[in-house]
Each structure stands twice: as structure tokens, then as C-alpha cells.
Image 1 (cartoon, rainbow, N blue to C red):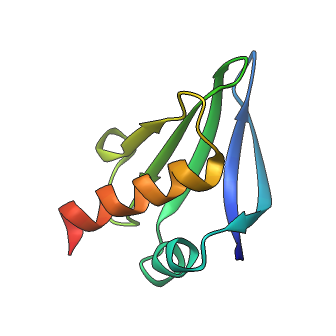
Image 2: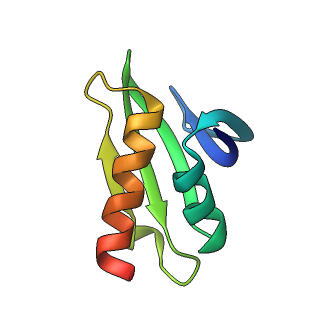
Length: 89
């Protein structure tokens, strides 16, 4: 498992906090770091999160989004990586 720097957007005002999250799948973290993917996590409501990912040359409106729907952060980051791979590689 690896660490990854992400932006956390907190409720209720969307305040941004840069932090390091742990327990990220090694393959996922390596992909995000290798491609300079900007990752953000926003709490939408209790226990519901949106995870955003975009490449450095993309605008925010081009981000890919994964909703947690009760899944772990690690599962969501894995899905986000797979989705990014499908549009980039």
C-alpha cells in the first residue's frame, strides 16, 4: 500500500485541505503520481463522497468523477484509476 496527496473539500463551504491519505493501492498511487493526476475528494453527505481525477493538462470540467456509494476510498480510487486509464492510455 502507498500514500497519495489529495485535496479534501469539506462541507459545508467546500473549504480545501491538502493532505496525504494512506492505504492507497500501490498500482493506483503509482499511476496517479506517474501521470501527475490531480485527485480531489468531496464529502457530499454523510458517508457519501465524490472522488475527482484529472490530468494536469485538463480543466476542472474535464474531471472524471466516482461516487463512493458505501465503498471504501481504496475501491473508489481503483475505479478512478481504471476510468482515467481508459480515456488516456
